Structure formats: structure tokens, C-alpha cells
Length: 113
Length: 113
Image (tube, rainbow over all chains, first blue to last red; front, side, top):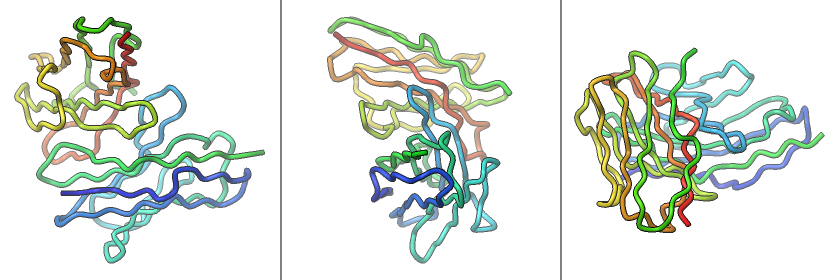
């Protein structure tokens, strides 16, 4: 079975500061990894995905995540956050032989001015 | 770009009533997934359909059923509603085999009183 751990339930940062949201996973088979962002009272938006190839993936709004197989991690980073990045961020995994995404418990990123 | 459409967006029902949630996937997406997100929790996979056939099944109660129709839209039917069924219900879609990322709709907020 697979599991996802997001150790930080809340991460407060000031605007323009760097941030890292941690995600670790457990799986006996290869996984596909995703980060989703959920703004208040909205659905989940796909932010990043790692399926294969380069272990460093980037989004259009400045976020990046690096797949580290040896550490079973997929941490999300941004060098300079904005107020508008305030949201809940979910890390998720999926294997090739199942449809379901398994989510972590989420990290609430709160950006202060 | 077109997104996943869910209706209704909000639904209030009483205990023991029934509810039907609808999902219209992104055009050319043939796979639909249903998730349940309780207050302050991560989304939990319920069920999925590929080409109108059930593809995978998660923690869906026996009181719930779902199907996918010939136009690829899907409906989640919920009977004998309980207070604990109050949650946000998400539908997601993907292009099917070989495509692992799932795109989520805005969700239906179900409140059972």
C-alpha cells in the first residue's frame, strides 16, 4: 500500500521569502507524484507532476519540486512567495496499476505581508 | 480551456433522503473519478470509470452507486443519507490509459441535516 506524509500542517511565511513544503511517500512499487493546490472554497488544481524523466519539475507560477527516489521525497519549493500563494497544498501519489490518488493531509501555506 | 463541470455546486438534504451528483468531464477525457473530502481532511477516492466501465473502487459505501454514461458524464447516487455524508464531493477526469494526471472539478458541497 502507498502512503503520503506531509509533516507540516501549517507553514507561515512573509511575502517574498522562500518556502519549502515537504512531502514524503511510502510505496513498494514505482509511483507517479503530484502537487495540487486548493484555494478557499475551490477545487483542486494540478500544480506539478512527476511521471518520469527529469527529477526537477517546474510550474508556470514559479513553484518547483524535485523527486528524490532514495529519500522517497517530492518537496515543493518557491524562491519568493506572494500573498496570492496562500492556499492549501496537497501532495499525492498514484501507481501504474490503480486509478486512485492517495493524498497527504495537506499543508496550509499562509503568506503574510 | 474547458474544465470539469459539476452540478449542483451546493446541495442540502435531510437524513435518509437521496442525492444525485453529476459530473461532466473535460472534452475527450474518457475516465472519471469521484472523491470525498470531509471538513479539514484530504480527499478520499470513492470510485472510477473508464469507457463506461467501473475501473477501480475505493472506500465507497454500499449506499452509494455511480455510473458513467455514453457521453462520458457520470452520476454519483447517494441514498439513505447520513449526517456523516456531509462533505465536498469532487469529480476528476483524465484522458484514460497512459495519462496519469487527474483534473478536478470545483466540487459539490453536500450538507445533510
